[in-house]
Length: 296
Ligand SMILES: Cc1cc2nc3c(=O)[nH]c(=O)nc-3n(C[C@H](O)[C@H](O)[C@H](O)COP(=O)(O)OP(=O)(O)OC[C@H]3O[C@@H](n4cnc5c(N)ncnc54)[C@H](O)[C@@H]3O)c2cc1C
Image 1 (spheres, rainbow, N blue to C red):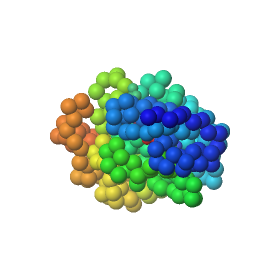
Image 2: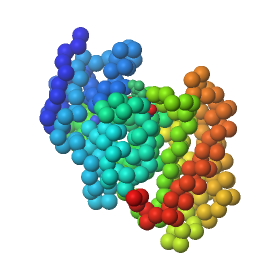
Image 3: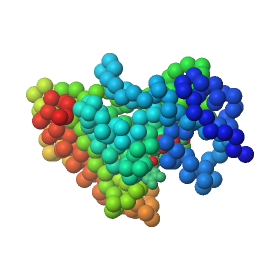
Image 4: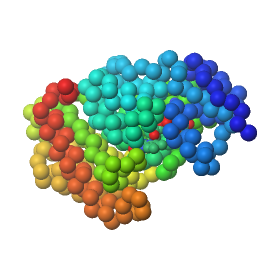
């Protein structure tokens, strides 16, 4: 039986309510995923603890080289924020692709990660940017890289009946960096994409070689998948078309997409993926050469 809907005013209060419900209550952000999951019988919970009104979870700020996004920050707020546009432009872009304006106005970035869908748009950009989640459970705080929070498709390693993600920390874009987010979708529809790719490149001072690269592809595994082979091939390499082509082809060997009646066959996705990775790398290199790292 449903027992209540709580609106705590602090993280401590939310954790106390969680503890009192002994695994029967769940954290809710915008509710755009969890309410549907409960209606469809995929999840159960006796009470919701809504963290969207907690003042300490509202901020978007730059702290010690990180963009810090509180857990109540919505896709619309992140997309509109001048700070996010400047310090993590692909995150602002990815947030603009989520659902509709109505969804973006209430759905949170943290919900996008904890829901565990590998191709969730903001989560893919966050993984490429090397973002970390700050997690509290009443006993203490821990940090985890976003891409390491996935147990399986739709299953997070965060347990929202016991713990709260309080913030996301995104390293701010630096000089010589460029990034790109590419989303392949069927048509104008409120749905997850067929494929999405996000990359971040760091070039050397002359802008001729890659220092390091992060390549994230989805949905081609249980969570957003990093291409360690592609990244390895590019580290230290010249920013040539040949190097990018080889890295994009290597990246596909690390992808294991499923066939989906709605979002394309495995074969189609494997054919298109290297083109998206190549395009994303080319765009990121161009941006890294053009800007001082920050857009705008
Ligand atoms: C019509 C429609 C279209 C959509 N289109 C897209 C799309 O194009 N791209 C896309 O990526 N997604 C899409 N979504 C999915 C959804 O809107 C996003 O995943 C959204 O970011 C979820 O955020 P939320 O705040 O609503 O999460 P909720 O539904 O509130 O929560 C999701 C999960 O996260 C947990 N959780 C939330 N906050 C916390 C916290 N602070 N700490 C611990 N656990 C927490 C909840 O317990 C739950 O398990 C769509 C959804 C709908 C209904």
